[in-house]
Image 1 (cartoon, rainbow, N blue to C red):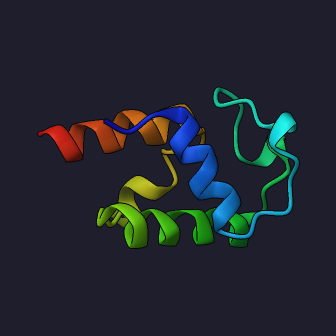
Image 2 (cartoon, rainbow, N blue to C red; image 1 turned 90 degrees about the horizontal axis):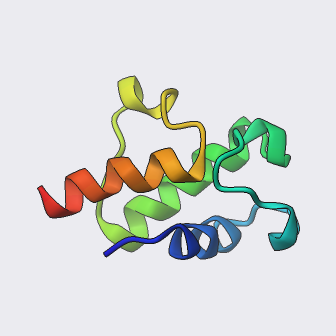
Length: 78
C-alpha cells in the first residue's frame, strides 16, 4: 500500500531541494517550494520506483502529495 510517507521519500529521492519538515501532504507542490522541474522529476521517480506512469492529462490535477497517493492507490489496487 502506498502511503504519504513513502511518497515524501520518493519526492526527496527525486532531488527536490526542500526540507522534509516543510512538506505538508495537503498543500500544493508550488506552496511547499517545488517548481515544475521538481514536480516532473517526482513523477518520473514514481514511474521508476512504482512502475506507474502518470498521463499528461492527469499530471496537472495531481498537485498535492495526498492527491498523488489517492491516484496511485486506484492504479495499484485497481
